[in-house]
Length: 248
Ligand code: IPE
Ligand code: IPE
Ligand code: MG
Image (cartoon, rainbow, N blue to C red; front, side):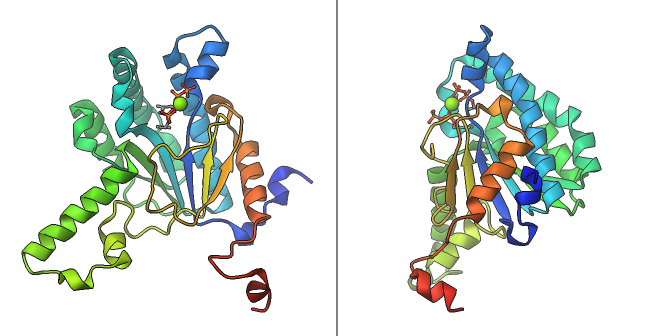
């Protein structure tokens, strides 16, 4: 049985998050500069997006540039921004062919005019696509996300629209950048690193975490199926005990 056939499509996560990591090391192993790895990571993005959409996943969220990534050498940042603009333009056909809507989270305004304009345009052009929402986390960090939600709630409290006594987890849910999406049931991180690096801190509270050693440019549909098969073998208890789940 192929890996794809082993995935139970009745038990798919609605939302998958991926920390795409390992581009630099992939390039270094080939004696190339880091940006060569980023360029080759685009194919893996296509594999993950098409593979998820084909199976019936509703939301795929990819960590593409963290708030902390501004600390990288200026040359690499510039090359990443150029690659982003080129890729968004070049992959419009992939989005249309697969009926995928593009979305972003993060402080996009700070990415520069070219990047924010091309993202805006792509989001408008794919707005009516229905099969899957592909969210790129750009200039994103989980703490920024929570802080921005807190700021909006504080604003509403000041203007009297919200009673501070009523603020609870649902209020945060309403103002967090992924509002309206289910939390990711599955988080994948490639390249053998075992950390969250400030990705979706609020939303990952109960996610199943899957780490693999594959470097991002090598990631393909088979790796995705492998992660899903592993996810489907787990018992998600949400604080209950096994017997309670099995009695249902
Ligand atoms: C992930 O690959 C891509 C981004 C963070 C933009 P890295 O660039 O972090 O690759 P490694 O971790 O150095 O190998
Ligand atoms: C996390 O990867 C950010 C993205 C994948 C965009 P990094 O490679 O930047 O993370 P750290 O710095 O090693 O934790
Ligand atoms: Mg890295």
